[in-house]
Amino acid sequence: MRAHHVNFRYILLEDGKEYFLLDKLPTLWGYFFPYLNWFSNRTIYRLTETQFWEIRMRKKHWLETLLIPAPIFLAVSVWAGRMRTSDSLYAYLNLPRFSFTERWIYWFLAFILAVILANLIYFLSSRSLVKKFDFSLYKKEKGKIRLTKLAPWMKKQFKGVLILNFLIFLFSFFILNWGTLAFLIFHCLILLMSTLLAGDLSYSENCQYTIERDEKDSGIK
Image 1: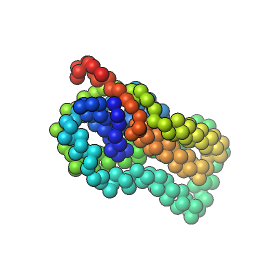
Image 2: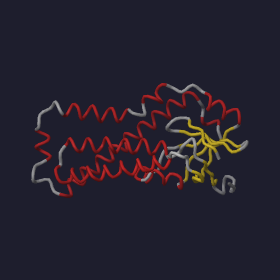
Image 3: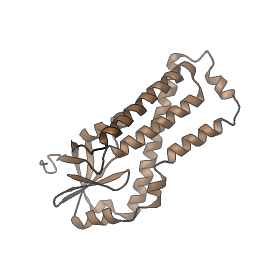
């Protein structure tokens, strides 16, 4: 199956005269390891040829472009605002009474916040698409999508994700030992970039896929 990019939430799949719209919303584990989304059950919509071309040729909503970097801009704004505030919170986070476990919890909550922000952006994107298309008209199915052929640049992308994950680990180490808000926000910024970029690009227009539909739907590839 060939993939055709729609936006960072949906992607079109084409196989001869069969057409599908794939929902790219990641599973929970997909946020940790985006490429696991290839092996988990996905929501797919069966399309007619007319619907396929209607979606592929449509004019993209401006929200679909602006919402992609929104959490990154938010993190930068918060970080910049922090530079102009007092050092009281900085001093509070560095108090000796903060235990190792408490700092781990603080890091975990920061990660949950990043996931929530990513979900919010996916939700807003979905709402903007609903205004354009009535998805209830499409036949909804469940299936597993598997990667069969990588795009030429996917190896570079994968290395980029590994580097981002290494930076996340590195800054997590700094947070656990120093507990500074500046490193925490920078960590969240990198995490958001990794989540959004890897979650979006793990379904590439230049890759090839197969879909294994559930038996209750069709039972065939």
